[in-house]
Every structure is written in structure tokens, then in C-alpha cells.
Length: 304
Image (cartoon, rainbow, N blue to C red; front, top):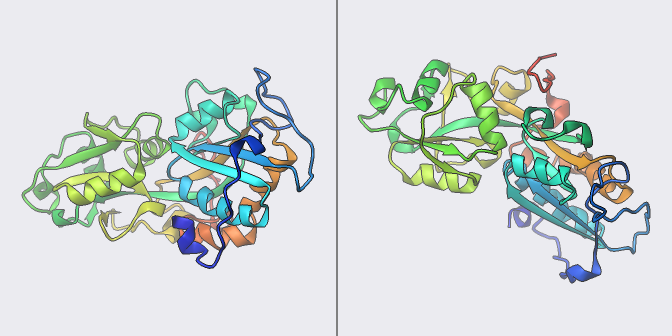
């Protein structure tokens, strides 16, 4: 597992039966609409607590790594981290079906989600970059060329200085926060051409690495040597370029709760912001601590 590489000397905790744990779906504030969520104000360290975090696959590696070390220090917790996309995370936490909804986008940006019910906990920033199969022989394109590729106006890599090879666009599924961010900031809101869609970042990376002429996009946390990340207008997809917004394709990583979180959930959210996590897994996995950002951006895209 990813966290095994980050914490090689840890001892894995024995699995506790799910029935021994009390699942906390909502916070201690408003948002429990059907009575199924279990509330608690107890801080008893012996009480068993289960937290379910669902949503963004871009944020998943960070939350998974953090929960591994957190549970080592707090063995009464069982934390399940699942993907499914930002849209799934937001809708499920709003419905009270999960404890935390992980998202790459603000709740206000997602149609059908009542953001007023949710409390935003920003835990990091992540850049996103277009990636291509290495055999395309392309490393840098203009933003307009990027838009033209994804909208089907450019269909061969030789049109942007690469091989005489057909371009194969791989998109993300609807509901993906990575897709929403990429389309908004990478494509200036343009609608991509119809193409195959994938909802898993890991699957996208594998597909692009194995498919001649393929192009897609990934969060920095998924970039590796199996594909070529593209520069845009000479600007490389690096953390320092995200920090000053010279690389504009980035988003906050949000962990939403339905209302004010309970003390047990808040304890884990606070842990996400500790130096141990912000200076450890956040940086090691390709995210940026929010404190590194030289700019702020709201849900309407306004830069401060």
C-alpha cells in the first residue's frame, strides 16, 4: 500500500470487526436528515469510532496515508477511505450517508448540492496537468493547442510538432472533480470532444502509458515516469508554479462534513493539518500545503 512506503516501520493494526465500531456519519451540528447518523460528543479514547470518507480520487492517496498513521496513534478509530469522484463524495455527505465527502471542487460549484448544509475543511492544494503517451514526442504545447486537442480541432500529434500519430483523448467521468477543474482552468470552459471516459486516476495513468497517441490529465499526486506531463506555454507543471498561480490548473482539496463535525471527526480533520502530515505526506505525494500558496481563489474563481 501507498502508506507502507511512507511509514515502512509501522506495525499494522489488527482488523477490528465492523460491528465493534460506532459509525459517525454527521457532525454534532445540523444535517442529520433521516435519523440514521449516530451523534456523539464523547471524547472517550476507548470508544470505538468508524469514519467513512468518500469522493475525490485525487485526494484519496493523501487521506489514506494520513489515516494509516492516525489509526496507529488512535487504535480506537477505523477509517475507510474510498474513491468514486468528487460528485459522489459531495452528494453522499450531504445525504448523511458518509462522514466526510472528499472533493477537488467547492460544493458551490456542484449542481444539485446544497452547499449551505456542508462545512468545508481545506486540507491541501493539488495541481493538475495534461499527460501524454511518451511516444508522441511532445513535451510543451500552447494553451490554445491544448484546447484544440481536447475539442477535436487538432487530431494528429504532428500538428503540434510531434509524431505523425492520431491523438486519442481519454477523458474523466462526469462527476470527477479533476475533470471539472481541468475543463475550467485548462480548457477555459470548452466542452471536450466525445471520447472514452475513466473514473479512476490510476486507470487513466495506465491507459495513457499503454495507448499510442493518448492524452489525458491527472493530479500531480499521480504523475510518474510512465507518462509525459506537458508544459503549457513554457510553464512546467510544478508545485512552485502552482503556488504563484503561473500554473493555473489547480484546486483546493476539500474534506466536507454535513454540519459541524463531531469531536471525534474533528480530531482526524485537525490531524490532517498537523506539521506531521503537511510537511510529510502532503509534500511527498505531490500536493502543496495551503500555507505555501501565494494566492487564494474562491468558488467563483476570483484571485486574491
